[in-house]
Image (cartoon, rainbow, N blue to C red; front, side):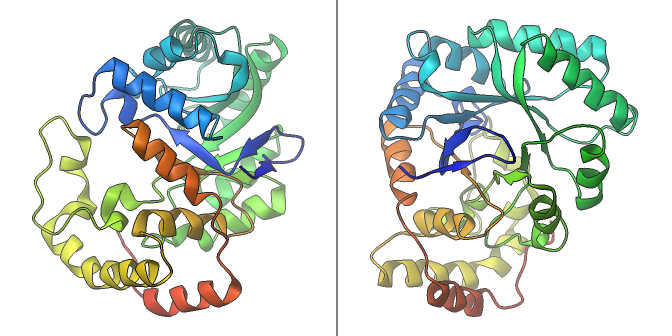
Length: 302
């Protein structure tokens, strides 16, 4: 699988990153042995970059179990979900290290901006952890363009994790340009729009009660119904090119010059292998122009 450098001075990572939110039960509970098999399948397929978070239920602990004999084979990323005080950050890192069964985290990310802690203090706290050998590289998630610029004044940021997909292109306005300017590698989350772009779901679909998508506003009937004509055209375009909607969604994000790796969740080994295969699809300028015409002015606003 192709690899790209994650930001200025960052590690080489594959263009497909396994998103471990579903492995902790975010899309409904799955057996641990299934989650572990999914992780191993992703690594074997070349997607040995794995992203999780302290807030992803049991995700970190199941990763720790899966990586007992393969820790050195992966680039392991997790996120600080709670507040940015040094006390909480230190505790959170230790909890993550324990759950993941490792002595260091390759990429430690802020799960979101926390205005109650000055960004200069937050970055200093991260640098303290880096100097202690607990973390190696620093990333952010769900930051605005201006928040990236502010944080970059106080330290090196290697990655940014915005929500970005064919139906939600708002990051193109400020976030992606800021990352290109600052030398920050983008690793978008939600490239499949939580499944909207796969063709698997239709307006009116009811998720299981333990699936967090139950409360996602994009799956409300009126929002999904408005998006469906565009989704259908994208599915047809993918089929005409011998692919499926999910692989088109992944390849489309990877075509943006700011994007280094695409974070894609999986619940089964088959899904992990399928996602990894999308990393080999290179969309041409002509392809992107045709897709842009299909998308038109439509965008999700929720």
